[in-house]
Length: 185
Image (cartoon, rainbow, N blue to C red; front, top):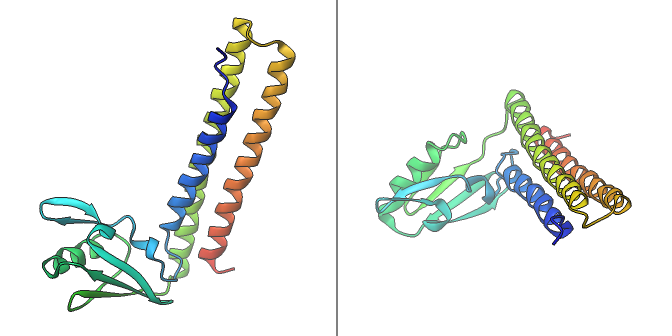
């Protein structure tokens, strides 16, 4: 059975792009986004859990997040988790609700976030290239085993390269859009 599986390569490359998009949604852009608090984990009942399992996060205004904690006894731990998450956010406790004003980003912080977005994109490009390398290796293995001919291998290598180029352009587009959003240009 041939080792080359185009569907698997497509799935893995698509996975790299999706991982990048997921990473990019966590970057703060100066606007309130419920995804901003995705990386926050709260220690409740002796276990660490994502914030969205202990509270409802909404964005009632463009520069405000609202976190409705389900259990009143968890307001303190949720407040502490948001403050210590390294996002530069300071919640205001209002009963069972935490209001989180989203401060304006400084130019320096915008540049840092843009650089971080570039790093995420480069990580995704490397992942895509690794998938490409795996595909090329499996094609060479198939040829050595005699399962495919040289012409077939070259044709499939071209397919893999086209898929790689398309995926990397998707990565670049996602990163460029996020950088534009962060820098406000």
